Length: 383
Image (cartoon, rainbow, N blue to C red; front, top):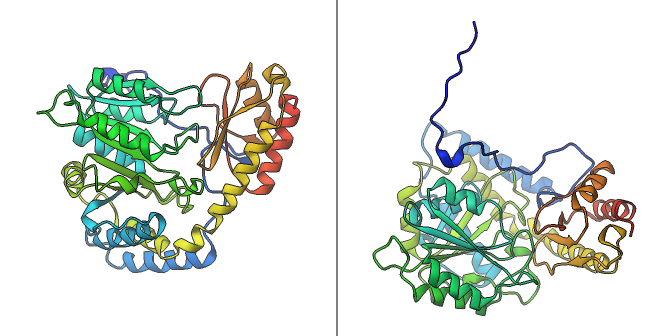
């Protein structure tokens, strides 16, 4: 029997759209999705296994939908990591920071409202807007990928967004935002009534998915939360905690902002198993974060090495390399970046073809992986 062809009622904005996702290829050196190259140690694995087994004994019951114990653990972690102590009701968690961001757009975006960011930045932001029927507007960054505050202020005043999304460190550039810049954006938001609201300002979201990798002296926007109730700071356990497979993200904000997310969350959205894994990892935070400093050192060495290179694939010019506070480096500019990307892939090294035209992004791996990347790039790009 032949299956009939039926036209499905796909929303117009989704018609013909390919699902988001970086290439998943089986090659020896994977440096394309900013994963932590060091898996959790055996002691961490043992704790996770024991805690998941304990949670499994009550899987016939729904989990704690407000994940109170996890919130308390996150309070202690942030107090130690950033020196900012928050009350548990100011913490929120979900299945990766992607779900946190989607919930923000569900709560504060929607028809008649606008979300704003500044390119180049994380490519999922416009998808969150699309999926919540939120108008998407993108401004520009300066040539060094910093934010031009005059342009930011003008864009906020003209577009009157309900949500402003700022990644710090920014993906794909690695650029971190100084405290003064975040303050200026928060102040600019307060001066404008967001379109489609009853006079409220925009929610300003600082996405610190790579926050633990920031260089010494680079502050966290967590320090500004008590001054700006319309500010939210999101984090993830996927990167520094080496828990990409666990899907745990979280957010810190005012209790009122968190309450707005509780309205749109799905019932029992954070499983008992996910909560157990997250809490076990937080109990081992010092051990899991021990590799972060090694990755910082490797990142800075990679930046220095790339800047010392001249490339035939870049017209004989020295490579341009963005300053990075993350676990990746953006570099270019190549006449044909796809050819360079493909050449690296042919040598068993997978990086990411993203960012401005001509640029590529490499995640920081182990020293052995980074040697393989450099050796392949020397041959492919004519260094």
